Image 1 (spheres, helix red, strand yellow):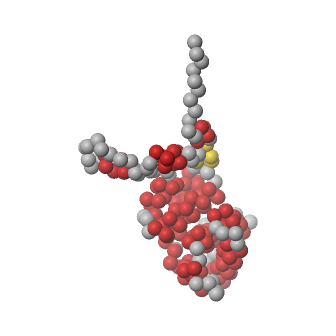
Image 2: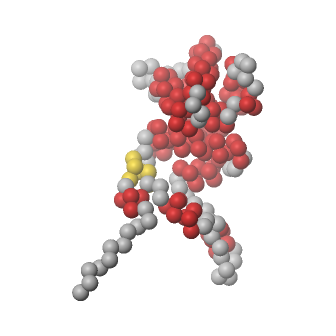
Length: 201
């Protein structure tokens, strides 16, 4: 009797490995959502469902609800489906889901105000020349300083610098750090930053 041939998944790690969510992972996902929203004008809630919650709306889903014929073509190719399924699942504790929702909503709500502040402190830089990634990193950091009393300012700035190092160009972290520091000083002067005891540590 021949031994059974072992079948391997295309992505064996993805079916067994679970990554646990963290604040940094939330920031990374919100960065992706806001950059996509900024450059494509795609609805932010749709992007949130797609990128953070991993709810994928395929053409097959849409067509099945409106048509009865069998000639349905998925929006994803086989290769794209494999890439989609290769991501390790992220298990999000409720507190991080809440953080993600608030960070996204506050970023959208305060976008125009923060953009005006960025323009006021970015000397020698045309705002339109700032990359979308750098803009969003600065917006996220500003929102954390203004709207999250439990997050220390130092932690916010450190996380923004790390995001810039990972996702932006080689020296972008220096630029984003400089702008965030200037915004921090303006917000403090205007008494817009109010931190809890925990946030002051």
